[in-house]
Amino acid sequence: MTPYASLADDFYINMNLATEMELPGQRDTILHFFECVQKKYPSMRKFYCRDKRDFVLEEDKDQGRYRWTAVESKRLCSGQVNPATLDAALDQHRLVLDLAPALLSISPLDCEALDLLFGFDFAYRGNHNALLAEALGVGVPFDRVADLPGGRVINYEPSLTVSLDEDCRVQVRVSTETRTNAFQVRTGEFAEEQLSVYVTARQYGSLDPQMSYVEAIDRLAQLAREVVDSCVVEQILRPLARTISMK
Image (cartoon, rainbow, N blue to C red):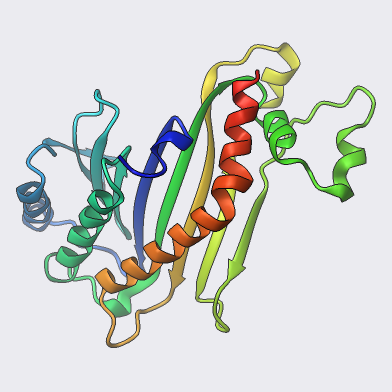
């Protein structure tokens, strides 16, 4: 069980590698890549193509815990929802990135951006925007706006991106995503949908000559965990969970 499992209804770790050049799409190349992934994770048996060019291999989703990986035209992706451990998810991403140079011809030069995302989903039936404003506050400059007579918050998705190096190539973003629209607020008819909190560690541009993709994702994973542990758990996730529990 990950240390984050109890903080939200669903927790997941996704890796995305965006490339400058298009990835190979030949039948043999794609199938061989996924066969190598499946050799490590035999339960990944569902293979399909979406949007004519995006290929996906995933586990059965019925148990609420599953792995997936995808090869798109200019992006390689990997994810695990509700992983048993953090290392289990990171080992999957390491495998995908270790296979990519040889099997998909992805050079360290061909990196537009590499990111690792820690995602936390909260199931909530109601106004997500108002819930976030209540749980986190809107900050002193906006307090009076939020308290306008008869006012209802219909759009509030706080996010912050910071650069961690002089070249702005390594960045961390903490963001939220609501799924409530004005029609739902107006009618008072809400479906139970996911309110998400994301922590994304990202590196832009080609890798350093002596760095592999596996080393790069390990560095991003360490950075993302530090931000979650020191800046997000007590400041965002627990206040949000407490506010939902009181509704």
